[in-house]
Length: 437
Ligand code: NAD
Image (cartoon, rainbow, N blue to C red; front, side, top):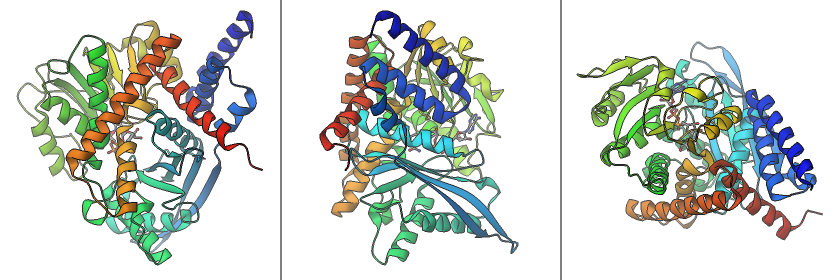
């Protein structure tokens, strides 16, 4: 490729990235093109790795408490199984779309490849607002959705896990439904379960713990440490609250947090244990209503633009956009959420010298410990939490180092470096396996 052709390809990819902002799957495809172009891969291979292997849409009829039947729409997407069984969470959210699920499944493929675990990428979702469902409705929805996707999932094919608005209780129902329908124990069909029914010690905290390991590694490369660093966290659910808790315990000052109910700010550092206590007592597990001396309320989006050392977006995708990227003051952004930064925002942050630890590395702790849970289920042999945490740290620190070195070698951002690594490993597996028939 001549330098002029390379420049044109780059310009085309950047334009596609800008146009793709609103559609996560187009964003995913454009990201693959960008990494593939840098690796000099041919278009046919890139087309193969951009498309999901299988896409299933299901309708999920649920008998509601008032007697009527409501039909929900659900999806399960298997993006790639070339490196191992597909792996990826199930999301319950009103904004779930097929393109979102396809993108999330694809990101899982790169994530598993970047941390080098023998799994591929998958994802599922149901278009619903779980906050409006009773406990019984939620259980019936989960069980019927599981029954509908059962032809695709299984311990050796595709193993779901929790994601936004789904948790251990919901994973227990997935396992129990599969067990009932298949007539044999199916612990290894899903991860993120409660401990008493095949869960792994340390799984609940794993994603947040991984985010903190990545923050430590990144700050160390920049000559800083976690103790004394100021942090803002968007999203105070599984990922954000655990990350905030561990950062606080390591001496960081978590000055801002937000969730769907609003945001809180304390320039001297929020008392995270006391905030967690408040959230655990709140029926919807929200920060709303928390008060303490020195704590000020903020408008939700303001948490992203606080003057801090580290920003952890840990809510949903598309939060850092071209509209607010210019106002982000954090030197380091560590993506707890999947896809929180749009491609346009990425370019702005890069120009402004901000360092972004990409989702497929930064939040990979969850899938690494899901992998451990699955291994334990298959062996029916359970580890101590210390062993899980130790092995998690080894895998993540090694992956961070490889991504960091790759970024230096190719003079690219950490995101492009991570994508290139993931893509290289997936393409290598395709090369070794060949294309059937
Ligand atoms: P969760 O449902 O436990 O928490 C989500 C949090 O985000 C909640 O506190 C919610 O109130 C908040 N939120 C939602 N919209 C918001 C908004 N507009 N502004 C501020 N806060 C908002 O979900 P989770 O499991 O913590 O997942 C969060 C993100 O991390 C998602 O992108 C998910 O895909 C990703 N992720 C999760 C895991 C995991 O193991 N749970 C693993 C990898 C990636």
